[in-house]
Image 1 (tube, rainbow, N blue to C red):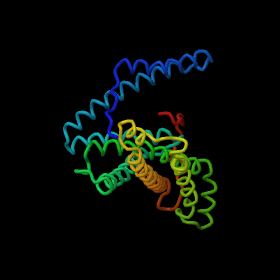
Image 2 (cartoon, rainbow, N blue to C red):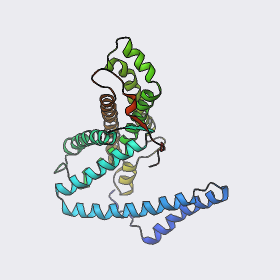
Image 3 (tube, rainbow, N blue to C red):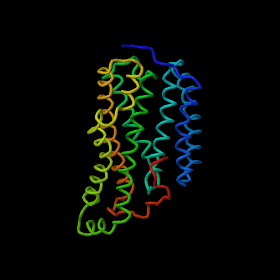
Image 4 (cartoon, one colour):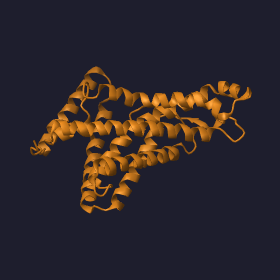
Length: 272
């Protein structure tokens, strides 16, 4: 079934841009005032993806671990910043903690998938490593954001309940554990919901891409199953790591909740 992929031309991209123009006209007609945002987002999409395309072509031709490491570290840093920015609160070193969590979880998951399951040689082959890590980060950072936001919101707005537990003799871990459990649970909800309806409501990107490329649909499904399991594992470990590091930052050695370390930020949208 390995039919050749149909190549797109600049004209095809221009026709595709008409879809965004239609959305802009709807915004104008309904007074939504989103046409500027749509234009900016469209321009950024084109520029960013073209730059990524040229960078990936260069790295694929280079076939060297240094290029893969450099690009993946950049991806991890951007993902860490995005995870924190999507939360309504943060604490000092929260971006570094998110970067550290994503790095550990991302590289471990990537190694298991490419080296053990797929068996690519070498395991960091850019054609496999970079897209797979991108899928890991793109999905797990949403869970991390929800987990971080839930935890910090509770510690910020309900600190009196935590202080009451501490005053009654609870250790910092005993007082924080219910909050951490809830934050991890909230972070896991999106991926669990996605797994419940995958293939029924949506056809995920990797599976769709392989089918369009002419691969056997059953082979594409097998890859997508691995991807869903990979994302679920990375999200759960990422939420656990984020919650634990946040807990360590917000409680001191005297078993006190340091609420003043939490800072509220203006942007809480999930569109960054």
